[in-house]
Structures are given as structure tokens and as C-alpha cells.
Length: 215
Ligand code: DX5
Ligand code: ZN
Image (cartoon, rainbow, N blue to C red; front, top):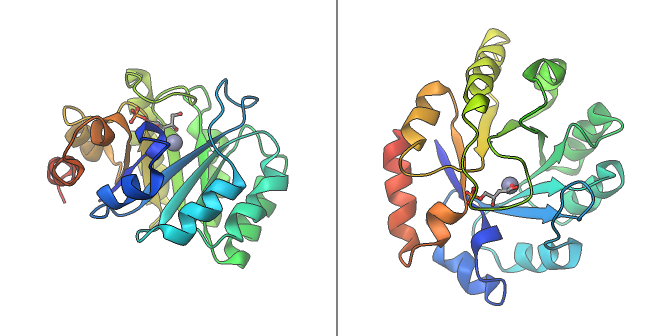
């Protein structure tokens, strides 16, 4: 089980200190939004580059952008741990996963709540992590969409059926109240923005979430 706090809910004027406040997490989740693929704008390549330079924990970069075919290699070349692109935005997802791995980054694919798991199954052997979005991407602090829970079960079963060991990440609306259920359904990597950064003591939130997830 791993806990990836999303810095979308952090103080953007103090990102280095905010990263230090989550040093006990497995990775920092960095949400890149372009105001095209999603109706919000966050940060881009130069800021992720500096975060990578100063972070003591791995970076998990979630690209919510159009044209990942162009941008994915540029993020991977920064040396981040993993790069997640959206299946809905990619022209050639298979080529992108191979590019990511050849650069040395973990390859991950995200699907939005409306995208069926069946659309991604044939790519499962090519990736290190599948991200099942549990809210519509774009904003932190939303409520988890309960219809996505069945997709977690389905995704875990497709992964298991193929004998794969890839991580199953959930992102959006993860809280202390639902993380145990998400883990029982088959998720093993949890993104949490507001459930970590809205509290003064981030280390405590991380350890609470970790414990509730069953690890
Ligand atoms: C939303 C982002 C999430 C967001 C989650 O589109 O991908 O990573 O930060 O925030 P919470 O955990 O507050 O729902
Ligand atoms: Zn995210």
C-alpha cells in the first residue's frame, strides 16, 4: 500500500516546505493541468523540474493535458519516478508507455470516471500502474463518485487474471472514511490531496491513511 499526497492542495507559494511536510509519504503526486484537457490550470515543466531537484521523495506526475504524445517524454527526462497520462488524450498510448520505460520512468495510464476499464485492458502488460480516477479530473476536494468503485474491482480482477503485479492507484475524494473500503476493493496506491494538506500535521494524516489502508 502506498500513500501519495497530492500537492494540488498544498500552498503553491511554499512548495519546497510543503514537500518536506510529506516526507513520510511514498511519493508526492503532482497534478499537471493545461486548461484544455481539464478546466483548470496548475503548473508545468519548469516547476516540476525544480520540484524534482528539491524533493527527497519520488515524484508521481499526473498529466491532465492534451497532447501527452508530445509532453510525456519531456516530463520523464526530468528523472521523475512515474508519469501518468490519460488514455482519453493519447494518440498512441502503447508508444508512450514504451517511451516512458526506455527513459527509465514508470509508465502509468489514467482513465476518467466515464472511461470503461475494458478500454485499457490490452495495455496492462505495458504499464507499471493503472490510475482509476474516482472524481472527474480537474479539482481537489471533490466527493468520490461511488459508481467508480465497481471499476476498481474490475481493474483489480483484470490485473490478477493476467498475473500482473502493477499498482492500482485511485485519485479523487480519498478520505479517512473510505480508504479502507478502497483497499478492500483492490486499490493499493492512494492519492490524497485535501485529506493530507488540509490538516496541520501531515505526517499524522499520512500515518492514519496508511494504517486505515491496511499496510
Ligand atoms: C484531481 C487531481 C487529484 C486531486 C485530488 O483532478 O487529479 O490528484 O488533487 O484531490 P482530493 O484528494 O482532495 O480529492
Ligand atoms: Zn491527480
